[in-house]
Image (tube, rainbow, N blue to C red; front, side, top):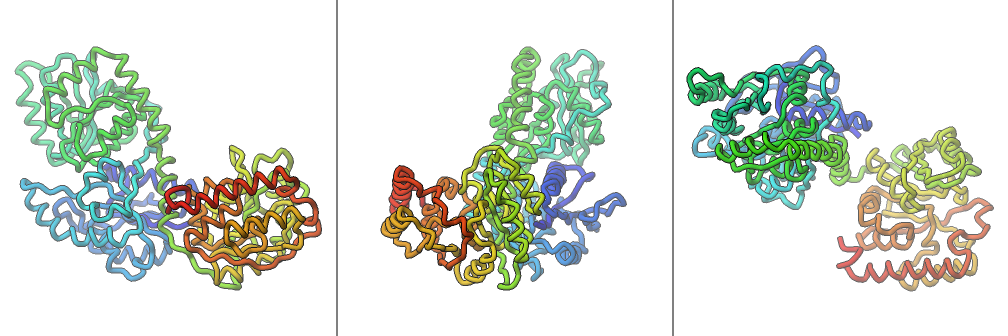
Length: 612
């Protein structure tokens, strides 16, 4: 899979949006996704070949203006041939995608990092946004999916209000390796000795609320706040510190300026608590708070309505939320924190656990990968091209046949073979890999249908247009796979049928299944099937997971979704005449018939299992 990210900036340019983009791309590339990035900035000699920076001519109302961005986007599409584009907004240059025909043919996912917030005070921004908004809405309209970073921000976002049906929430994630305690310590040296060490990190901008923190600590003894960052508000904040510092007393706030990542992590490791007093929803999530949580630090943040910031801290149990702009409340909370080290430690431990369990970049990458699956359309194939076909083989203790089955599949020209080794106790996995198959070893037992579904999800993630499922025990004849693929050009699902193998019990079961389901199919329980991309998308869904191993249930779900199902005759190996593992006795067949009946009953009531 190839993904082109269209972002604003990229590290070492500072910023939470930039840090997240770098972490996400690293995580995706570790998973084998061909992620590339197009952003603003001056190219650097150490940039990797998948990173393109476009020089900025000037900035206009906080927005970079890069005349060469459109040309660079056209070049990136031609060079990387992305299967899906990931647009990070707000970003005025991302709107160039609307003007490029090749770009419009590629599905889009929009990552909504923040609204563009306008106020009466910032009249210039308000006028600029009136020009930008139509393009912003056009990008949202064109997007297949829109990713919001928290439920609170999603609920409060006015620009997203018209597109809620395509929005999904995936919290931002943090790469813990990037915030590990550095090898060199000594971060505590930036604070005077014997004080409660408070730290805040962010651009010195109006929405960060640093004046609230300065007012809160100005009169607190044995407390010192260090603010890391640079920005347009430095002079105003420095003047406020001078104004609130009594004569003859050392300032209780230090504006440290910008620092490198190692120094920042050293200070995060050394501080006693982290504070972020943001006062506008421009603070959409709070990457800096996540970094403090990863270091196990208690966090005090603004209870900023409609922002993901308080949601992050409350969800992680990492600290307290405080009224926006209320210096008195902040002063009281800081005093309490200094006198209750046990509570501070408990918040820090909870935050560290939350980063590991819920807010890691790995969890975020998995959530985004699921969205990519939902956003990608089926890819057409040609009748004589088998490169877009994946053969999925569920296997448990099939060492006696798996190598022969893989070899037979390869003899007909198929190279993409996936064996799901479902808790085998023999050499199934090693023999399959030696024969040339890719082998997945699930941690927990899956069963036949669970293994097939795992293979279908793998196929979607790796961009296959068709999936054939086949038994590992060598019953089915791999030479018949092209017959299934030829038939699926006009259908959505094709079943390989060999009714000649049916025992009297199996014939009875089939007659009953046809009666209750209405299917005019000879072999409803055949594991030899071909699914096109539309069918795979349905069968990869959580709803299909509930079906367990029920072959009839899978067909009911596909029919309920309006897909076309057909059957073609296939040959089978001679061993197929042996006893059926499913229909070998009356108790087993009665159980199977009962379970299938329950599935049919569920399918007759759309409020239950088969609701879509």
